[in-house]
Length: 174
Image (tube, rainbow, N blue to C red; front, side, top):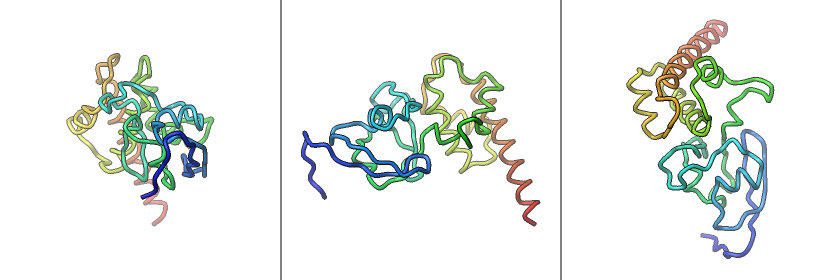
């Protein structure tokens, strides 16, 4: 394993939302700080800094990751996806984001980025979830504003829409 010196800056090369990226960080720099301050991906929020609230959730090589518990140097060579990567283009929202908007599934918005990342990952693995399954997945996130009901409604709506899109694509491919 490479030994890193505490005071040195290390070049970190990775893919961020499909784009090759590189920046320098000290070995002790948390991924949350690196994403926000080092590369400008400010959608990832810093909440509890203990991995409990879920506000900092991103994916690293396809796995859900609490960015507040991950060191920036750990993502060298990895593929990282943040909430900014959910939209198909800078001027359009993704299906899940639109469902949140329609269902007023956010108020202050602080927890929203992490919840969106977890739901995006969850819906890829579970395209037809039950309300109970969504509520169970959301138990890893703290939201003090919504009471979770609009989030669950938005997730169910997005799951149905994504499923419908998948069926339409399969039919057109046949």
